Amino acid sequence: MPRFTDASPPDSCIFCRLIAGEIPSARVYEDALTVAFMDIGQVTPGHVLVATRRHAATLWDATPEEVAAVMQGARRVAQAARAAFDPAGVMLLQANGAVAGQTVAHFHMHVVPRHAGDGIDFTWPRQNPAPAVLADYAERLRAAL
Image 1 (cartoon, helix red, strand yellow):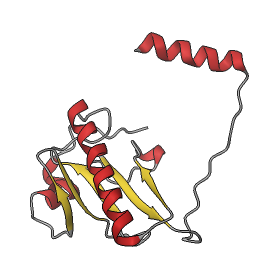
Image 2: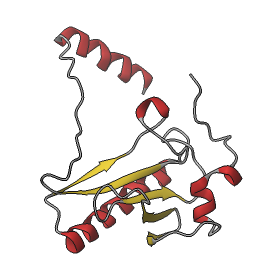
Image 3: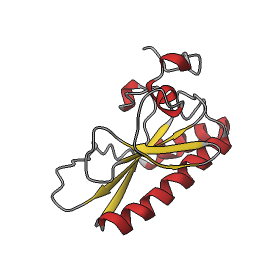
């Protein structure tokens, strides 16, 4: 399966073009490492994307500082959305790779204000593996750390 890579040319990346000002956007917030802008496909009022300034295709390509800055920006935007739209909750969504639902190969996080009956459905099939299987998964991850 093809992977998004940091080698994706930034000049063809829609988010890089937006960040560079080549494409208009409704910016909400920016700092040295990130830019937050309204998602043109608003799911609910106040749906914002927080993206790295530098082209990084996925979480694996972003620096630890960029990842932290995206999360800090998402928190700031979520607080602003709470004040502006009074949502009952907020959903943060960050996907990496097409199989995970990533549609733009540029590291970003969705900040989606949530309201009862907003039509968003978010479910996944629980696997409920045996404790021994969970222990094996944990061991594999500890070894990889």
